[in-house]
Length: 514
Image (tube, rainbow, N blue to C red):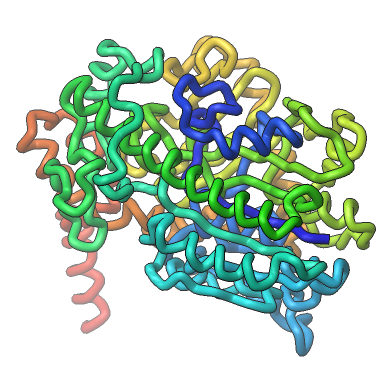
C-alpha cells in the first residue's frame, strides 16, 4: 500500500475548479477528483491551523484534546495526567501516523515545517521520517517540490509508505514569484463580489477587513501599503481594482501550487506507481474571501474558514462520486482504520465514512459543530440548509452574538437571518448543547478550553491590540465603531476604581489599623 496525503494550507474549495469555480485554478487537482470521490460538505472541527491539524492527527475535537488556540494554555494539548504510560497515547496509535505505522505497517514520512511554525511538536508523533523544509510555513512551492521529488525518486517504488506533504502558497500573504505572471488578469471576479457587496464590507471593522488587511500582531500596528516583498497582496481594498488584486493573488497561489502538484504526479507516473497510489487531497482550513467581510484570513467558525476540500482517490474503490453528506476532518482516522482493516480506538471522536469509498453509500452526520478560538471565540453548528454561529468573543469585528445563514440562498454569508428564524436558532442551540454535554462527559475533566481562552484574555490573535486599534478607528472616521468596541470589551481598558470603592477601601484600612 502506498498513500500520498497533500495538505494544502488555506485552500478553499470555493476556489477549485472541481468544486465549480469559474477560473481554471486547479487542473491537476481536478483530474484526481474526477478519478475519485469529492466531498462537498467536509469541515474542520477546529480552526485555524494548529487546532485543525491537532484534531486531524488525534481524532479528537479540540474541546477534548485541549489545543484550540495559537497561544496561552490552549496552545498546547491537555496533559494525559496520572494515566499516562511510558509511551503516551500518541505514540501508541493515538495519532494518525503512529496508527498507520502500527496497524498498517506503513513507513510514515512528513515533509512539512508545521510543528516548528506553531511549536506543536505532537504533530510529529508516529512519523518515521521528518523533512522540515525550514521556512516556518513561509515556503513557496519551489521550496517544497524539490524535497518531495527527491524523496519520491528515491523511495516511490518501495512498498508500504504514507507520505504527508504540506504546501503553503494559498496562505496569506501571497508569495508566488512575480515572474510567474497572472493567468487570471483578464478573467472576471466571482459574480457575487459586486460593488454593492464591497461597499457593505467597507462599513465593517476588525482584522483583515478591507481597511486592515495587513496587521502586525506583535507590534500592534496596521499598514495599508502593499508590502514590497509581497506585491500580490494588497494593503487594503478601496475599490474593485484592489479587490481584483486580492482575489487574483489568492487564485495565483492555488494555480502555482497546482502546477507543482502536477510535477509530483508526473514523477510518480515515471516511477510506475501512480495507478495504484492512494491520493488524499485536503487542507487544514479554507480561507475567507469576503465571507463575513473578511479577506485573506481564516479567522472565524464559518463556511469560508471551516469548509475544506476533501478528495480521495482510492484505486479499486468508487470513482467519480460526489458526496454531499456532512463529515469532519477528524473522521479520516477511523475511515483509514476501517479501510486497512485495523481496530477503531474508543477515544476517537470521528465517525468512519469508509462506506462512501467502498460503495458510494451515504453515511454522514446529522450535524457538525465547528470551533474557532485563535482569532475569535465562536462555535457553530452546520445542519440542513443552515449555519448557526454563536460568538463569545468577536475578535473586534462587531459580530452579532448570534448569526444564522441559509447556505442555499446565501452561501457567502451576507445576510444574518437569526432574528427572523428563532425556532431554527433554538434547534441549533439544542445541537450545540447536546454536543457540548457529550464532549464534556468524554473528556474526563471539567475544562472547556474555549473558556480557558476567554479567561486568559481572549483569542490570541486579538489579544492586546484594541487600544491602538480604537485610536486608528477614531483617526479614520470610524469613531462610532471604536466606541462600541470599547463598550463591548471593557477588560481591554482597565478602569480607575470607582470613588465609592476607594472610600470603602480607605475606611476598611483605617478600621484594620485601629
